[in-house]
Image 1 (cartoon, rainbow, N blue to C red):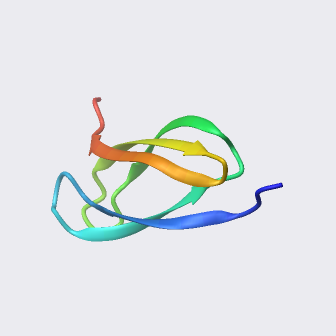
Image 2 (cartoon, rainbow, N blue to C red; image 1 turned 90 degrees about the vertical axis):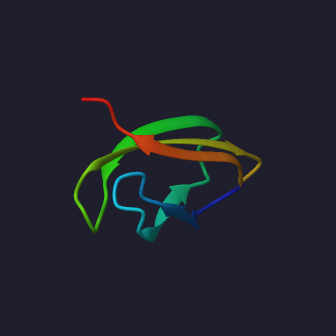
Length: 65
């Protein structure tokens, strides 16, 4: 059984600052969620694909809305 989170780096698509995001790797499949940048507070949409406790795909883009 897979437990825990993985810390994954990303660059904010608004202010271009590098930060990290903790991804829950216990939930397999695609995860799509919005979280504000810790630096500029603009919303970022993250799309993460987890398989077998590992991140297979990770993307971030400005959130619509």
